Image 1: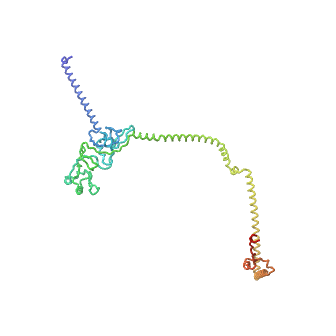
Image 2: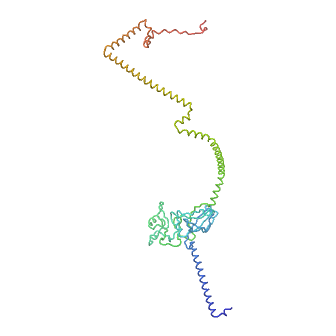
Image 3: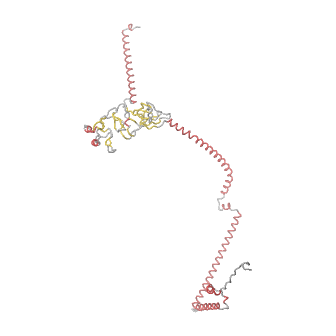
Length: 431
């Protein structure tokens, strides 16, 4: 049915319905567009599309386990990603793979000229590797966001507010290695710099902070250079071989060690067999030693009373002889003790008698004072009589000469020696 055939009321209702459907479609489109825009914004915010990114580069020996788009971590956090990987030209022998990556703000502020490295380490056992940067420990930030200016020393002295300006380079005294100035030092040493014959200095306005990088640190010149698009800071790398390469090296070592392991296994097998044989022999020895152990147990069981050990060690006849010997020794010792007692008593009586005799003699000497003189005279006369007999020729032979007499009269009384006769042969004697 054509639209013209409808009544005015139906046409009015239809037009209202069409407008409602149009508003609904427009609202749905706006909601879809808002949702898509929010998704894009959230994704960009999450991936850091709106953040400032600082570019860096490094070199690796191999590209195994790395690819563009892989995350770059700092202290375990994903702070950037690898953007480019290219092999070095064939004539460059020192480096193999050029790796370019970028770090998002504010994480590139942790990267300083000293202590920061790009570490390539294994990420899994499947050969994947990851790129990690380390926090700086000294030096200067790799990028600055303050406006740089190259000026003369005189112009630097004429600046209106020197507290808002700082040095942007290292200046060394010509006569030595002492630093006259270094980055971020205030402009308070300009006179010494002028005396050191420096005419131009690199300075930066520290009170102004821009969103994009204004300077990049030059390690060789020791100063900040104005940043230009395409400038990158070189982070030296510490590379660890991939897990597959390490596993391959371990497998090679295992293969080299397998013959020794097999020899050791054979030796262990021989040791185990010898141990089994020894155990079986020990079992036989234990079975054979059971009677001896039983006898020893029985012998030890009878040693819990006095004298049991002697009965076990000495035969009965030896014990009887030992008892008889000990009895005889006891009786002998008793008799000897009795005899010694009697002997001691007899000796005591003899000493008493001797004491009485000496006492009586002493009394006789005391009673007769001339007795000793008479005895002495008698002894002298007897000696003279004997000496006279020795000189009388009839009794001289009864007294043998002493040593002194032999010495005095040996020359006269000694017999004359017989002349020696020399024996000779009959032929020598002429007969």
